[in-house]
Amino acid sequence: MADVLSILSRLSWASVLDILLVSLIFFWLFTLIQGTHAVPLLRGIVTVVVVAVVISNLVQLTAFSWLIRNALPALLVAVPVVFQPELRRLLERLGSTTGGFLSLRFRETRLRCTIETIAEACTQLSRSHYGALIVMERETGLKDIIETGVAINGDISRELLLTLFFPRTPLHDGAVVVRGDRVVAASCMLPISTSAVSDRDLGTRHRAALGVAENSDAVAVVVSEETGIISIAYNGRLIRRMDESRLVKVLTAVYRPQMEETLPRWLTWLRRKPGSRGE
Image 1 (cartoon, helix red, strand yellow):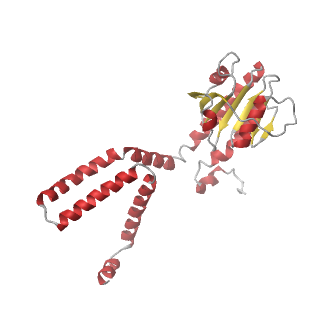
Image 2 (cartoon, one colour):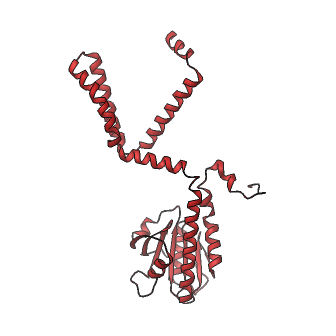
Image 3 (cartoon, helix red, strand yellow):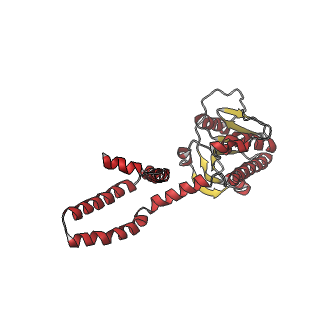
């Protein structure tokens, strides 16, 4: 007990801070690798090292002790190779955390370009009376819907959307799923809404758009083949008769909370306009 009190009495604030920082780093690393293949590997390495050190200290084995002393540096060199996926994941998470604020403007620009591209394509499709159904994935994953279509995985562009919905192309039927600024799949099948729709002019595309909007937080943009009217399905509701500028405004309003979430909570005041109290 006296030895413990003696050690504690010699601790300074710098030593306590040093110990806390090291502990936090190890806790963060263990949290990061939890549930991955690195856990049994790390457990095996620790077990081998502890058993080897205990045996070499309890029993004076000269050759075995020499082997352990020379193997430990090689083991430290091998750790980055063995845990390469976990280390890559660590660096990616660290980069996304520290660079979130710096890349905020870039993310907003990409999302704004995606919205404007969809609005331009839908406007041109409306003028040509080409039917279209574009689903923009948000927080809720649409993997089940994507798997019903044909994989595209291409950068979104007005030309690509116009080509996919051209009546004589094999993929013009069904929905196009957009994730971020990429077209993930085309000719996807959507669930049909079972709710009562008062407007009898609404066809299968509109009911499919309502179906995906009722079952997820996705946004669906519909272009009527018969009338050329542009509509948006979101949160189980259908907003009709959209022009290009209004379509951009509505989609931007829908995605505004997602844009603001890219900022840390303690920096959200930077997004407020001058004179706003943030209520």
